[in-house]
Structure formats: structure tokens, C-alpha cells
Image (tube, rainbow, N blue to C red):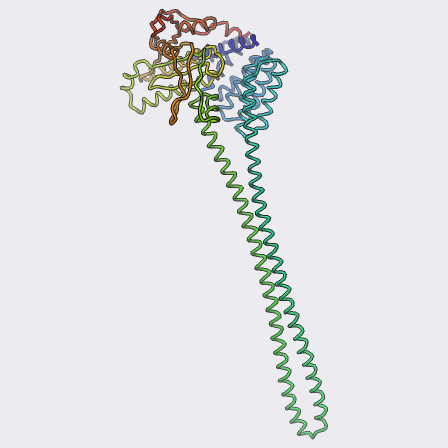
Length: 549
């Protein structure tokens, strides 16, 4: 484990030295490079250098570094190059390719035994799955890493903590889905009740139909009776006709004419009655069909309305859940912007966060030289734009190191600290960040001088010691740190020079084997006496040599 940790620190050296050179110089050196090891180092440095400005270029150089490392069978650089390509794809919003390269980095890191890079690869890979709400896959990735560390006997307290948090998030999501299923079940029961009512109404209509059919049957019987009466009348007419034959011709004719008229009138009356009965029967059947049609239409409309209401309810529930999830993520992001992750989790869970004392924290202060005079040369909009550009660059540099926490900005001053994550932290990364900040300001200076505009130069000071950290206030609360360490770091900044990184004797004692430093005298500190100061020159060359080995 100690060898892996040393290798990780040496690998970080290449990144810092590469940042000290311009991209043009690195590309020129790459064209002139002869050995594969030199090409590997320069391609990797160019990939890191382009990460902030061009994801496409970073991917191109990162893949070239990976291919060369694979040809050299250098598993360590294969893992770092694959992880660099994965980060570049994340910046390019290409999650699919990012997953593939993070998986490649994880496999190579396992072969190289690089525990820190394994944890970073697992964290980056599982974050993509959580953003896609594939919690099962995220859980599986973390669990496989957990098994790997358990089998190899490596301490994984950080990984276990993330594993438990993800497991808790998955359990919470399970409870939410169970509640949603319960709500849908209640809606289904309401629909079943409505269907039962409709079936009851249908039975009532069937009974009404039977009554109508009974009335029609009665009409048919009456019609049959009328038909029998007609037949009897016809029989009487035939009998009378026989009687007429025995009468005289004239009387026969007279009586025949009279009887014929009477018969026609009777027949006409019977036919009219029959026509009326037929018309009534047809009207009754038409009314029955109309009632059935109306019932069918109402039933279809009711089912359609119930279906649309159920679908709209599900859609609204889904939309509301999406809005709630988006707002929750937004609130979490805002909280993490002002608080370290452990403090933010404690504040969400308990509604407050306890103040903590940390024994070994390194505090960084930066302040711009001649800020007042420069601000008089710029409009308010230009001044805010330049400050925002510088502080955004500082924020991005801090995101490259998971042990550095931004504390606050005060006017043109910027303050951050490392060692606030629950364990004693070495100040290597925060010194690298300070050198990168000065490198960024130097590049901005050259650009501004070229176009004849004012530019910012900063003094940066660091000191290592104990601090108390916590959340203050209720409305617009803020995370802050207190103690002599903060005051001494401020003294280091105030007694430094622009473009330089000034550190105290305490910090120097922790990094003197990692960085080349220059002694520059003493400074008086309140209640502390005289304190030695050192300028950090650069990271030692042996770190670069170890990466290319």
C-alpha cells in the first residue's frame, strides 16, 4: 500500500510540471521526441493541459498516451490515461464513451494495484449510473470494487462509506416506488367500484327491456284477436252473399251494393286498426334500440373518461416526481456548493451540523496585487467579469483534487483548505493547486500584456496547523474555519510576492522531500513569535522520472 501511495504522488508530479509549460512547448517537444517513454509522458501532459479548454484534444492525446503505455506494458500509465479520457468524455457530455474508458481505467488500475485510482474510477463510473437513475448498476459497480479490496486485504473505509450511502439511497427509492404502487392500487379499486355500478345499471336496463318486450307481446296478441274478428266478418259476408242470390235481382243488387259498402268499411276499419298496431310495435322497437344505443354510447364515454383520468393522473404523478427529483438534486448541488459533503449530509439528516476540530489542516490565502488601482481602470462590468473568470479557474483547479475544500471569497481574496475530510491530510495537493493558480494568472498576464490591458497578479500564502470548522448562522448560513492557522496563512500571503507561493516552516517540514523550496527569511506572527518562510519553486524532478519509468 505504501508503494502504491508513493507511485500516486509521483504520478501527480508529471501533471504539475506539465502545467508549468505552455501547450505550444509541449506539442513542439512531442514532435521532436524520439523514445516511446518521452512520447508517453508528453501525450499524457498534453491531455491534462487540454482538459479545461478542449475536451476533443484531451481525448485525442489521452488515447495516444494509452496506446503507447499499452505497447510498453505500463499498466499504471494505461490506467491514468484511460481515466483522463473518461474525464474528457464527461466534460464532452458523452456518458456512453465515458463509461467504457472508466471501465478500462478500473481494469488497468487493478492490474497495477493502484488503490487510489481504483476508488476514483469506481466513483466516477457509479456517478454516471446514478445520474441516469440506474441505481442497481451503480450498486453493482461499488459492490464489485468492495469485493476486490476485501480479497486483496486493502483498507477501503472511504469506499465502504460511499457504498452505504448508495445503499441507503436505493432503499429510499424502493420505499418511494412502493408508495406509488399503493396509490395506483387505490385508483384501481376506485375504477373496479365504478365498473360494478355500471354493471348494476346495465342489469336495470335489461329488466326495462324485458318489460318493453312484454308490452310488445300484448300488442301482438290484440292484433291476432283483430285478425280473427276480420275472418269472422269475411265469413258473414259470404253467408249474406248466398242469401242475396235468393232475392230478386234488383234487391240483390241493392243489398249487394249496401253489403259491399259495409264490408269495405269494416275491412278498412280493421286494416286501419292493424296498421296502427303495427306502427305502435315498430315505434316500441325503435325506442328500445334507441335506449340501447344511448346506454352503449354513455358506457363507452364513461369508460373513455375514466381511462383518460387514470392516464392523466399517472402522467401528472410522473411529472410531479420528476420535478421533485430535479428540485432535490438542485438543492443538493446548492448545498454542496457551500458545504463539504459530510457536513451537508449531516445538515440534511439532523437539521444542524456540529463544529469539529481538525489537527492538521493546510489553509491557502490568495490576494490580488494593486486591486484598487486596477479596478479604477476598468468599468464595473469588466471588473466583475475578470474576477469571475479568475475565481472560476481557481474553482476548476480545486475540483481536480478531492481533498481540497473552497471556504469563501472576500472581495478579491480567495480562501481554501485541505485536510477537512475526516483524516489528516498532507499538503501536497493544495500546493500543486497553488502553483496551478499562479500558472493560470501568468498566462492571463501574458495575454493581457499582448493586447495592452490591465492584468491581475496574486500573492499566495499557506500554513498547516489545527483549526475549528463549522456552520454559522441560520439564514444564509456559511461554512467557515477559525484559529491561529488561518491568521498565520494570511500572514504568509501578506508577506509573499506576486506570482510566488509562500509557505510557513510547518508546511515546509511536511513537503520538503516533495518540492524544491527557497528559504526567504522570517516574519513576526501574533502570539507565535518569528516564523520561517519558504518559496515553493517546483515539484522535485524524481516524480516525473517515476511516471516515465
